[in-house]
Image (cartoon, rainbow, N blue to C red; front, side, top):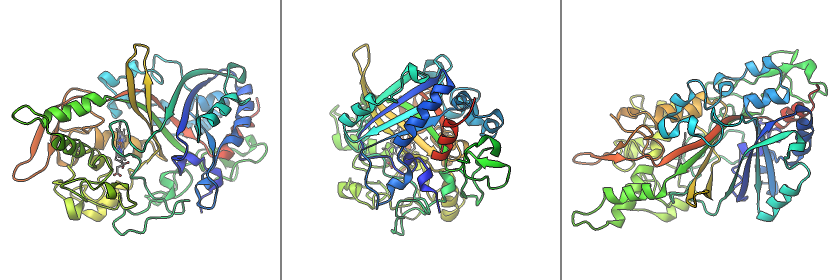
Length: 469
Ligand code: HEM
């Protein structure tokens, strides 16, 4: 069974009933008071057990995650840190990562607001969620609310108030999430739903889709003075620091609403120059793979079915039997790239699902909306993903599926929603008798900053808070 009580609640819940959230990025200036601070905040963290149906829904929660630099700054020993994967220790903005992730030109880390090479290093992400604005204000007044006297400097802060189920382009979001065996959420019963995944895809120290245990870095048993951590699976002289932890991807993605809808309008303008609202909506849906209601094009190819979009069956579909050629949901649409389900040619449906299942993520994104100093309003998505293997899951999706122009037999198209940082793109819409090729897709989404974090289990957090020296 999964040790839900030790896993931070964000892994198994997006906290949908808590619309207010704040993401506070901190730099540790003094490890000793920072550890005392950690001790005070840990009781605020709701575990994944809270997601079980029998548990009352929390009014508020905190979550804490560390960058590799942050783990070092709080005092984790260097050899344990070395056991973490390279993409995490290198960080999102250094080495090969920007090239892997398509963070070039307008997305270049040099231009980021935070998390880039020109901005203050990030050590800790403190994510706060609350049911009401008042509850968030109570958090602000709490004794542990970060200040320089608690051993930190504030690097960056981001508010989010989620007012609907839609992301800023207007599409219902947060629909397709992986089901997890032995998790707190009942598994789907619909035979058309995707199969549930092993817990090791989302939590370290459990079996994953390769029937291997997802590797969890260990610490010398002697450093765990109060025997807080679980035993290491292989080594009696070590305790497991990584077990029940996972990796969190944070990317602030600015969305250009006017460019997105303006382009859809121009691309579908009638010959007499008038706007065709239905064609415009349909084209936007083709780029996403779902209508704004959330209804999948594969299940309703000709027109939106809002009731289906809002229903529990809005994710019960695969592509191979109904939509192999992409006549309903284009091969290059966002959702078909982000999860090709059973159509990863030439392997056949079953094999394709098995492959797709090795590249899934839990999405925990939140919208943001803010007025810049210039007076302009900016909207976007605080993209947050949870996965046990940054490279095999988040980075693979981004690199091999979203920004790859040759994805699944396509010739020169990138993801129509989140790509095209390297110049205007194309989008192919499969249809009979001939496919339609649209040109001049601008960049609709721009990267503003982000980082890779480790989201430790609660016992691992207590271990860090208790470190000596
Ligand atoms: C601002 C940027 C983005 C927007 C507006 C956006 C929007 C959407 C929408 C509307 C959906 C369909 C609803 C749903 O299933 O929840 C979706 C699904 C999805 N998106 Fe994104 N997305 C963005 C960025 C990303 C990025 C960067 C990734 C991964 C690297 C990603 C991965 C996914 C995945 C895995 C799904 C579910 C696919 C499925 O299982 O059917 N998205 N997105």
